[in-house]
Image (cartoon, rainbow, N blue to C red; front, top):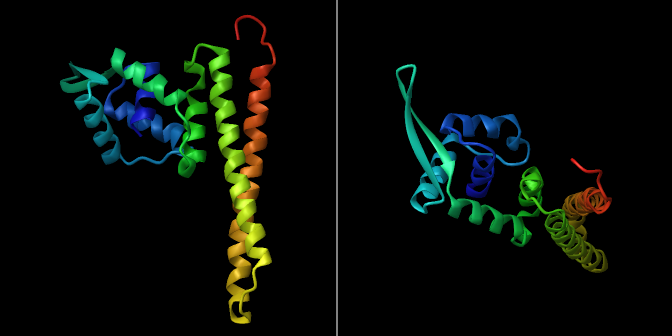
Length: 183
């Protein structure tokens, strides 16, 4: 959550209300956040010195406008370069793609996406290994009805990883293709 807030503040300074609206308008498609969790993230970022705020009175109302600090920018870029956690591949990968345009170097963008592809491949291989082990094991007859649907959820995970791998590989291929100046 904190890294997503930093990413939004990399784009422009925002009030807490505007941060919440940014989540609702796009980020919520892959990253859910309540107003309370957003407040907690902002409070944490302030305490770490990664963001600051300026108070302004507008239409008789006091507003806090949050901005990212130099340390916050360094923290954001460190997160973008960091390995994707195995237990949060989809959410973290999509958040990183959402902000990929903030990474100025094309080679670095490629490295970020290549790491995501690698993490997806590892996850898919693990799920396929589990599937193979389960299919070779013997289970009591009374467990077969339950097992059928457990295997369906495993299949969903495998297919989701396959799609993710294909999609992110397509993005990586796109980044590999030289772009005309100005893009």
